[in-house]
Image 1: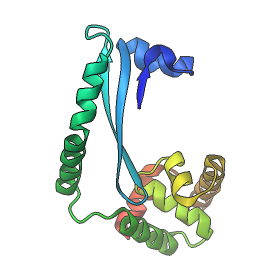
Image 2: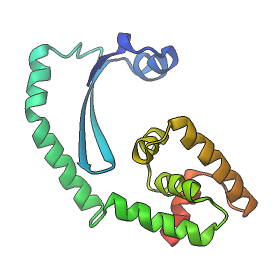
Image 3: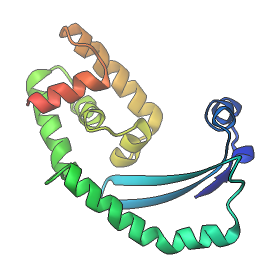
Length: 163
């Protein structure tokens, strides 16, 4: 995915990210190393470097498989034996034990939050609308508060890790 700063439709995002940092464009290389996970390697150009030339984009696309392999190797080193599906299942089970008041769907959403998925990633993973994810998250956070726990990503990650 190739995007120039002046093509971004959201003025606030364009200003806060691109204009403030003097970035001119981004080239994103997306890959899915396993079912349910997508990674993006983002390459930026700033005003000193100018825009990517078409030949540079072609060269980067040519080495994209090598970059993907290097990224996957780095992930294996950083997270040995990690499997997103197993990680989510462990988090779901831990949440079921620690916060039994969560509905099954709230638990599914919270398990994925605990594993670092974004609302859009959760929506894609569960085949639901992002707005549904936000509603379920809001309900779950209220139930966590009722249980004396802070409703946030860090709390969920700690609950999931503690088992």
